Length: 556
Image (cartoon, rainbow, N blue to C red):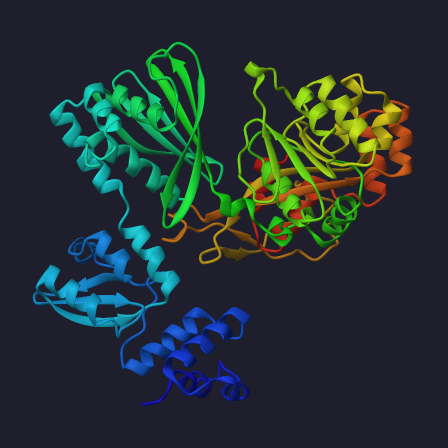
């Protein structure tokens, strides 16, 4: 039987020179192939296809395969996830099973025992198989069954409280319902979970890629139980229902610890609960993951590598400002540098960084915390948000006294940050001297790589975009959303930031001192090479990262 590497070489996907580096043993061969995948020499799909050929089995791409949902339902999701297998087709006496490792006899035996059917094997790529398991073994069906069960039992607050006061009762319907809501949201890559009481039911919505989707309707009778359960998990006062409250909880999902920020809000039909999912994996992104254009990245890097000065990230709520700042901190933080943050609340826990939580009730505001930490010998200071004149004044002074200050501000574009600070009664000459760089950003939905389709727009359409397109220029190829199983039929999967990076030059500093308008500062910045938000989005649309419609949706 040919080895895995021999098959890969015969197929022309692996250089024959690599054979010298591959040891003879099977385990060692696997390790070497894994190393070649990490180096980008091979892809997971190529290796999976070769492994199928080695075993004399068919190779399938599950995204294209018409999976039989009846077959899927025969094997429990826990078994599928444990062994990384998925039933994809069935006949009267046999079951077709997709798996990563066809040599896993324990998985085959377990599926055979569960279904009492003959097993026919096919091989699939691991990432493809796991996403298919997530897709077909969603919690929707279980949630619907639970909803019916709760409705029949007429379960109210008493059941929920009993389940939450005795954590060992994890099979209590309310507890299972809440756990499923959270795990399904994490699986769907949602950023927020909205639990909204209505007159006759309890509505559940997930925010996925910046857009809210209706997910579940539960009976009104479980409302108090669900809310009480969430309050106890978040260490929130369950007796207080008249005023908004904030809390925090942690859950385990797929071997990862994920934090959730919880906020309650009294409404006419009961308390609404919004949970922000804070995945620490997002806070450890590299600078390349920010997807800045080369010109913008060069300008931004030259700012945060300086030992002092102020960098502002601006944009509306939910535009990825915190992610940009945390990513920058990862690039800046070193053992020889003291980094202190002041946040409200602390969204992501970062090792090696001193994070301070604002507590207004105890008198710890942004301004008072900032005064204190400046006496703690910091090199880099991150301020969650500049909200008032006092915080702005201290931040400016810190930037002028040898500290690198990172913060956020709510403005529509980068030039407006200068005028916003002067409107906060900060002396214009201080603003010009302290401010080094302003990054404005928005989040647009990223086109799904599997189903996006190329098309040729008309010259009139491009002229209406106001991105400087001239009819004499060649018409570029753009991409539009189509929809497939991977992106749940939306045509988009994930999000990408659109940036506007303004470096504060001597000319802009002079305009700040003269109290020039944001429009004047913008004109000067553009002549000095600043790429406006719309143009940045247009360039990313030409690269096939997003669609023109998305750019027009998020950029005015």
